[in-house]
Length: 430
Ligand SMILES: Cc1cc2nc3c(=O)[nH]c(=O)nc-3n(C[C@H](O)[C@H](O)[C@H](O)COP(=O)(O)OP(=O)(O)OC[C@H]3O[C@@H](n4cnc5c(N)ncnc54)[C@H](O)[C@@H]3O)c2cc1C
Image (cartoon, rainbow, N blue to C red; front, side):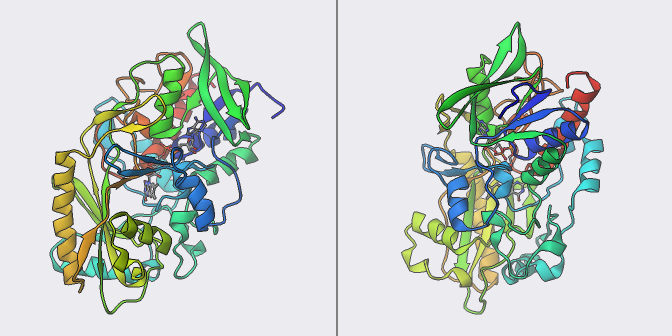
């Protein structure tokens, strides 16, 4: 990186960071994106995904009760591995904090695909689960997707590993658009802290290939995700972050059926939000390697070869706020008895659906999670404009969500990113 002076620095390139970076760059601002992960071309294979989403202590973290928490440390962040479900933002949560997101939500719908999958792209496993759930009276439906469906390949199952066909929208699409507008990306750069002078953000300090480097800008947006952002803020002198958070714990409920041969489909194509009971249920056919990992984790060794016959329903709960992120970025939060009760209720319901589908031996994975957030809440650490107590230091990612959550957050984060960019551009800060 030759230049060290920018109009704005964005730390992290998940949905929050990539949106702000793209919008600022399109408005002519000189933007630096500092990203811890690598910017390798996306191959969509297990080896690449293993590095960016399953490196212990980095992208794969464990709670004290061994729930596995995944995040993508790569350009595009966790959206490189997400399932592309474009869940409607719960506007009422933000209205309580004085934020009206409606306009930005409409803009996201204009800009990105948010349609449910065409029937030809819904796999046989998702179809079977949906049909059986409907027979049992659930309002189980196709879910909206951030997917350019015309680019999907038949029987493709690569969403989890990273889509090599550009079909699944992810943060990297916005990073690339920012780069087309003269933004600079520095990958492999772990930001340690924000530099502050006289109460104002003036740049960042980061480590790349073991070397400590600085970059300067009068505006810094930290978008390092629910685990990364509180650590950077703490190191920058902001106390009180990283506590009472959510991670939306989930289980995979599995059962083999004799009359299906599948295992290659887009996960989370269909589902139902059981809002009153505090969880979401969806189909979740994952690639074979991940399926075997889920099974090995609960010692279901006899099931390791049954991927193509096993129907899987994900039950994802809205957990109560609690716990803290340790100084070293560890997740100090357990799946408590209330979360377990929600997941157990979902397990009973998912089991009944799988039985209806013809499955007999039904079992569940151990706890997993992929939505850490609420660690830098609006109303506590950031204001309505997502600014911290340090002038010109903003946060935009899952960490700013102010309440317990339980939903796929990407749509909401893109909308928040658009709103923040407008504020920065209208407010002279950028
Ligand atoms: C398997 C899976 C499936 C999912 N499915 C869906 C779905 O269907 N729909 C949905 O809405 N959500 C889904 N999610 C969740 C969604 O991907 C995340 O909630 C979302 O990406 C969070 O956005 P973020 O900006 O907060 O953080 P992230 O996307 O995690 O981005 C943070 C970025 O910051 C970088 N970073 C971290 N620390 C530093 C540092 N110190 N210095 C520099 N960079 C740093 C990271 O490398 C990363 O690129 C899924 C997640 C997973 C793992």
